[in-house]
Image (cartoon, rainbow, N blue to C red; front, side):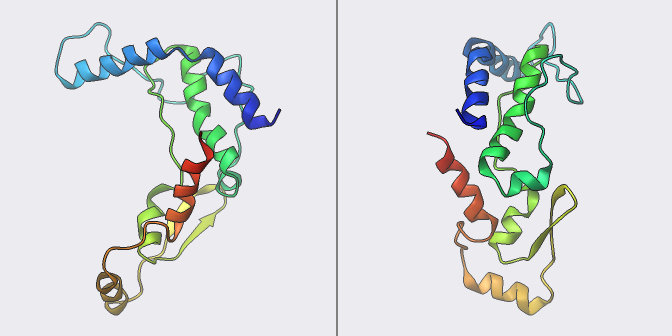
Length: 154
């Protein structure tokens, strides 16, 4: 069994859909200004839990490996579930704010284990060229990688 399959099995064993329905409802109530007791809360940093065997890869490693990025995105869900706070189940293709600039043609780079940085377009002419091209193909730049993440899930 692959590392991804093993951790997905582990995740599926502990996740309670009814609990997440209740968390969703708590947020709906909160944003509808309904009185609540208790208010939804989330640990502001990663909660200290005993069962911390979920992979915690370096960010740059996740950029090159879709399965590792998925595991990295599921890690906070798994850990927050263990402490019982109101962290919503959410994952994303974690390329940061440079996705759209890269689709528009901006260059980007990775640094030492931090989110990617986008380089600004060098001139007004470069910006005009982006506008003149019209609606961009969402499968260019990092958009290509983002769309491939959806193919990973059944």
